[in-house]
Image (tube, rainbow, N blue to C red):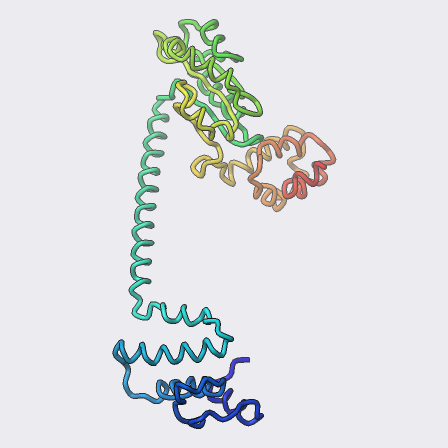
Length: 328
């Protein structure tokens, strides 16, 4: 419970735990009086002065003198330790100058972030427009965490290219591109191009050594052939990959980037596609579909797993919400 200062001192006086100060309770004590009662009387004196004054300001010297006595009284009552609140109040931004400086700095930062977002948005839109016109890069590396649909994505792109006359060629190493290269437009597919669980220095060095030959091989009389590959997100983030002299790191699409994540509608289509493959689409309610599509972790993989196992399908809601627990 919080007490008014005057009320608190009145209670302490009347229960007899304090000895009356040398100048009494209603006068400013002598500086030589260092009793607890004198310190309380000092606080009471200045409290009453401020509470009943008609003046709304004081000069710096007057403030410093009065503050020194108040600080001394509070510190003495706190067993010689300066209370944290004293320092906090003394440095309080009364005029709001510091707040204005901070607010202005935050505003400038927000403006910068906004402009950066606008530039990124413009770049993405330009890229999308460029790719819609058929200008697909020579190499596309698709990355994400495990189970997010990397392989399905490059296969889908490959099928789209096949419809435009490309020959699909699955490969396992960069030398296969040179070996199986023809004058036709080709799309070379390779999963986990630099290692399944971690970056393989040996594989990366192979791609670097053959980089110039690969660039030459991808050029045909009919146009450019393509490489579509997958690699895991933790490999892409490694400095060795980012600084490598290879075609693999020129265009990297992160499926988990905000601009690439699956929409709610796309999730529902993927889920229902997997369920229909086993005639399960009519056994789930619209509400269950909504709940399952709230999951973001390895969503395409979860759809496949829940559709291919009776026990997982029976526990489908828990499976999407607590995958690891259900699998255990």
